[in-house]
Amino acid sequence: MSKALEGVRILDFTHVQSGPTCTQLLAWFGADVIKVERPGAGDATRQQLQDLPGVDSLYFTMLNHNKRSITLDAKNPKGNAILWRLIAECDVLVENFAPGALDRMGLTWEKLQAANPGLILASVKGFGPGRYQDCKVYENVAQCVGGAASTTGWRDGVPMVSGAQIGDSGTGLHLALGIVTALYQRTQTGQGQRVDCAMQDGVLNLCRVKLRDQQRLGHGPLMEYSQYGEGVPFGEAVPRAGNDSGGGQPGRILKCKGWEQDPNAYIYFITQGAVWGSICDIIGEPGWKDDPAYATPKARLPHLNEIFTRIEAWTMKHDKFEAMDILNAYEIPCGPILSMKEIAEDPMLRANGTVVEVEHPTRGAYLTVGNPIKLSASPTEVTRAPLLGEHTDEILREVLGCTDAEIGDILGSGAVGGVHRIAAE
Ligand code: COA
Image (cartoon, rainbow, N blue to C red; front, side, top):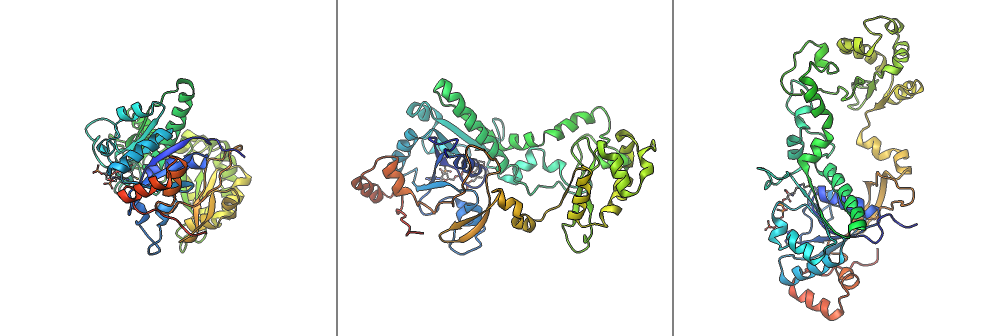
């Protein structure tokens, strides 16, 4: 079966997490992704958080599937010349260097456009234009400046970052959409363009509902926040709301059977208005169905703590999966708090390709997250991440048409480091 992005060639000048997330997705959709790495070192994440000595880390392998790797010193004259030859053969150049680094390599937008007018230049930076535009940014910084940290955690606690990598992977996702959109526009104009995603903007986009609440706050208290029912006054900015639902249907994380021993014996329970009657029956409060203090969503808002305490008395009698089964029969929206161990072992996630086992020549088998976007006519096969420079020789020959003599010359110049040829796997 063909792949959606077959024929698209990406020069992947990304590192760490944000950029690699984007190019990995494009590779899963069938693009030929050529990852350019510095000879000897490569993407810094190859060596970060290593669990096995001398073996590419899971940090790297889980973000760089389905790519080819070429080592190239962009600051070596011959290396730079090879880079320009690759640029002429590619549709997209993706990078997430610190601001100014690409220009310092001589890869300015003007020169890139002149060399390849159809080229799309896609970049992740921490901030958009303005006073922070030159700053380096990592995940948690983005969560802090994009509004996530100030609105996450407990009201009386410190700002909190999330385990979900909304700054890095979230911005990579935004960038991937920008790239395919630019590729589509190019089919009509023939022209490339720049695609710029700032991590601050990406996080804020994912915190859209909190900017909504900031404006609602100007018109009165946020009645679905627990603090409203607790009589705690609101300040000038959206507060941290613990595990309150961010939407119009109040929800909480509630204890389930075994919570004393198991840190994840909890369920998220949403008191959707449409199923209020069923909730009352299940928890043994049928009188709440017609009691004016509880019968409507608005009437319930000041009583959320009391209501959820009562629901929790019921959830604590069941384990989280049992509770999920019972509640789902009544179409009550809920979900167990799954640990990473439970997710890794979940047969359903394995069966649908969301959790995938991959073989690696030096690591052996490892688990990864497969493509969460399923295209019916472009199925994803997850293949392992490349070793450093594994495809240098192959790319020089196949993409640039280099001869043996040229390759000898390139090797002698130090532009590509050593050429990696692995034994049959
Ligand atoms: N050949 C030659 N030089 C190379 C190279 C290659 N193949 N690959 C990288 N380099 C050089 C760069 O040119 C740069 O040199 P310069 O500073 O002299 O111009 C240098 O390596 C370091 O790049 P930089 O991006 O500054 O790396 P860093 O490790 O110092 O910073 C980040 C890392 C992530 C903080 C920074 O890249 C950044 O802010 N990126 C944008 C935001 C982002 O994506 N952040 C999230 C990452 S998950």
